[in-house]
Length: 366
Image (cartoon, rainbow, N blue to C red):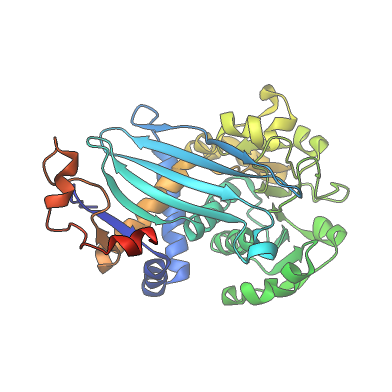
């Protein structure tokens, strides 16, 4: 996108709503799946540097969360950074999403903040798209029944994305939260699919594809039993994002082809933390670059270990900024103190955008 070295584009939730309404939810998801597939297929580690996320553990009396940053650099172009928090009790305690994020884009030549946008919606979309890409590579092409263990926000986009690539005939949902179960059909009604809430045992037995997207506590897994899974089941494990927090039985991982989104990250906080490094299969980039090599696994158990990959954030950020520019959306603001005398920090006092004088008594409360 074109950028002014003194201005930052703010893309808000209202702007994202306009983009979705203009493009269409299905068309936008299709475009994202395609863009992510191409980014993975053409990935060049010499041109794009991805770092595993890092951050702070947020202690809680009930269940810990985290606040992390996820950076990726396109050499000679831009750095995309997502700040993301995981707060498992947000929905019930604050009426906020479990995952809150902001995505930012920086010019690598100057360090200028080019754009800042909501990352809550973007994260949900790109996580679903990543699962769809992996599922296309690993699941049986005859898959028709999908099971969602965890019926929260992530489950909606998991279902949406995968349904764009597979002719799903039945959706089976299960959640330990009654409210999430009861509202799942309503929240996914726009997909026009047959959604049923079923016992966990039935979901495991009947699903060709399973997505686990839970807020299980550290040490609280697994969230499925493995007893009656189909021989060709493909599982997208989305909920593991902390050391000690896992959703799948170790025995299932040991007999499956386990494909991490980002290996070094998954070994620390994904399902891969349960197994040895030599038991980990190809990462998502390798999978997309060589789909024919892994085609025989479509009739065997497979797992996509999805911890969240910064490359996905780069792709979805670029996609939204492209549409924002095309549609004339976003608000250009002078956020940084730049544009005046570069050697004078107080030059901001003499620029046309200087803030109007205020009554000091109001500002200080005196």
